[in-house]
Amino acid sequence: MDNNGVNEVFNKYNVDQIVVPDVVKEDLLSIIEEKLSKVGFYYRVAYRVKTSDSILNKLLLKQYRIEGSPNEHKKMQDLVGIRVILYYEDDVEICKDLLDTIFATPGIWETTEASEYEFKASKVNGIFKLPSYLSKNISNPMLSEYIDDTFEIQVRTNSFEGWHEIEHDTRYKGSAFGGNEALARKMNSILATYELCDDSMVGLIEDLGHHHYKNKNWNDMLRCHYRLKFENEPLHPYVEEIFNKDNELAKQFYKFRRGKLIKQLCLNVYGRAAELTITNIVRIVNQIGPNDERLNDAFVKIELEKKEGASFNRRRRFEPFKTLGQYKVFHAKTDIDLNNLSIEDAFRKASNLIYSWVNSRFNEVFTDIPEEVANYSNVSPGYSVMVNYNPDKFEFVENTTHLDSNVATRLWISDAYIRKNGDRLEFEVTNRYAEPEDRFRDSDNILFSRPNFYGEIADNIGICDVEKLKEAVKYVDNNEDFENLVSLVNNKDRRFPVVVFNAEGDWIEEFDINYFAYLVGYYSHIKMFSNKDQARRFANDFGLNMTEYVNSITVFYPDREPITSYNSDIMDSSYEVIKFDKKKYWNETGCRAFRRQLVADIRENNIIDR
Image (cartoon, rainbow, N blue to C red; front, top):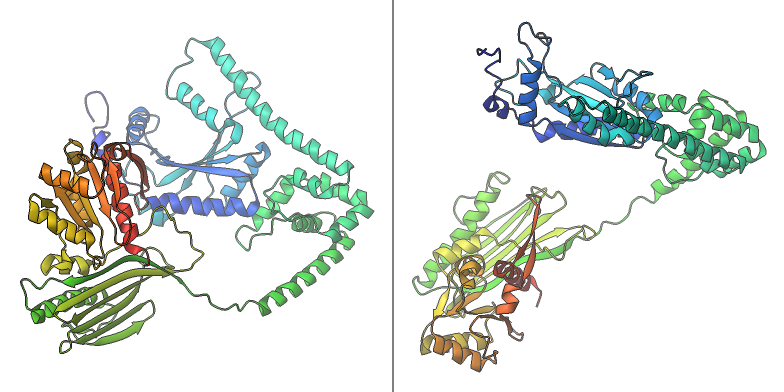
């Protein structure tokens, strides 16, 4: 305690140590919403954790656990808060009673006291004990003596939901109406109008129900009177026929107290949920009300017909399995570089790199997998490995499958081979996944996934597509460089695109060509002119615009016409960046947007079946 009577532990540092994990939100909302949905309320829910500033301000204001303060024996109870927003005013009390049955102990409620002379926003707030497994997940190392393991539930109508917060902030957190009695009365009048709106909405829908009663429109009469979130299934013809013959019986269902029905539904929230159909609601009301024999007989008949239909459906439920769709996410057919290694050493080293990847990924699934490269085959639910290793014939084949750790319906498939072809060592890799064809796939945000061992072989041995691929820019500076570029572009055996840069402006620094080469250099050739004469020669030979070529990017995809983008194309680009894993989105513009689009185009071209 300092000289001003303030507890020294009430500080920003201690408050910032409080961490409420997402599981608290997810589980509390799930527990509450399951019950609200079973009853059929029209509702919304909101969740919040108090901000650090709000926690600190409340601790300082209320002086919890401070000797002599009004809250000497109390703790802060609303670190976590949930607001249940209902659409009908007469649901508030019923919802409050339902919430009392959900957790270990009923809530401790605080409600607005109605006054003939003063009006305040309607308040129904309850304090509940957090389930122990959730309270244990909350980290509060410094202030656990001052903050209780409880949470607050506020029940509001939709009309009051927003304005209550404003009224709370102006009256409770501040003194906005101090000395402004006329404006305070005006605020009270507005709040009273909202209460009148709540009552009027219920009255209007009841009047509409009475209109349908007079017109013998039983289906809409029941919907209006009971005001639940019904399924879109009309009243059964058997029941409708009985009501048509006996309007007085139908009137009993119109006059039956809605609250009594909902309380009956509340009793069922811990078992199988009642079907929220008009027909089933008539059945429940009949059980606790009229108990009409004609309706009882009709419901027996309806149930028998339903069982017969269910039996027929069960006989037909064995549908054939459907094949999974397969989607390529990377493909490369290259040669392994033999400039620095013999073909024997290159084969052995490349095989070891692939096998090392297989072993590290699967050794906990298949505990008998050899440490050193060898023939191996095994299958386990969700996983398979097949390695065929024949060093005498210079052949290595890898096929593996594994489940996706995040997407339960997705299976990943990796295929790779190394084989000798004359004096060359061919290396081909395909990575793809399989999943149900009806699963949503965003065609604008394709998956692209290169297996790690492809990069390992490229880094440690080298891979070639006519010439060696590098995650670096290759500069064209002289005649020899130019002739090599032209030869590469025109080579019919080339499988990867050639990307040629001409850049005299500052945009190339922002574009970051080195980062671009790092991203795509192992499945494309990145060239840049460093000699103006060679750049002009290239522009002339390949038909570029001679006034704009100095700032341009030309892409030569195999078996396609070249695509040239000039300065205006590059600088006027925009690209939507979507990070699904981080739930982030933004719109990139300018040359970096063009870089993103170019990377996406190269990757999309890589996985196109040709």
